[in-house]
Length: 370
Image (cartoon, rainbow, N blue to C red; front, side, top):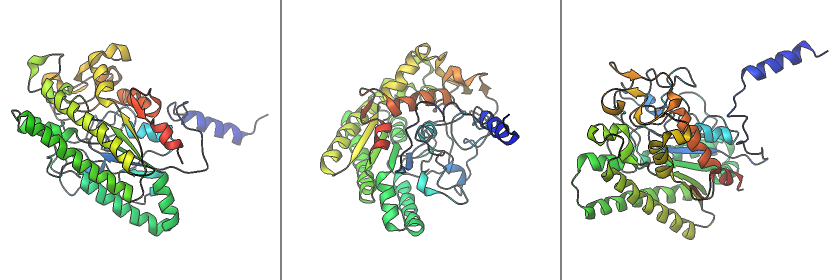
């Protein structure tokens, strides 16, 4: 007969079973530990903004954010887990904690520097994606936080061990959307020549950050390119007459950026020894789910689950607002951010998607690289 202790242990395992964590997506455990460092905007923010010394009233620290998985708001702008959370689970890592979260950090597993409202450019203003913020951490400031973390790692682990950890880690970025939403909303009639110059400026600044990450020891970069900005409910809400269609001008900006990003990463690979990268075609993957939701198990790809106004594009969690009964039926949770169900599908494509969606490496392959 099995002992009581064994049965009790088995019962606890079943109670805490998470089908995602134990799915076939998880990589085979290796002797060489890999960390995950996350940079970006509200799509990847795990809660950093709630720890800034400014008011964040109206952001994702209120119900119903976090309702699906965590059962309480965590600062993630979704009903549950965001894409980096799933990637961490696929890689056998804990969910990357917000860098600014008080308390002890195990940076040897990685951390999350992303900040809602952030842009590549320091002057990009927050609050453009249905996130009414008064402050954010721009990408250059996220890089400064990474440098501080590196110094902490050196002190805790020693230079040799920390250098090896940073060289084996994967660096995951989602940034740029706010820069272009700012341009579209503030200068809607900007000439084509200015738009091209603006994209070039964003790419120069982004490339500069990536070169610094490389100089600090990073070798494996994963990118989620810019979304189909003209399909975002918060962006469309000012033009409700478009209906199920998307606004073309923001789409054009996103396409310009994504082509330039692809070229810039390819150039970095050719110039920096050991530099490896992955780009996920977020633009088309998300766009297809918006335009053909039933193909992916969703009922609605146009309006948000939570919010008010046209397409429920604003004020999720701020009365009066509407809330759907089942977020998993929606692509969008609020006016600018996807549901946990959509995030899982996107993360699966980033982890092991086909080469026309994620390449030249998948994120799983980057983790498997020494």
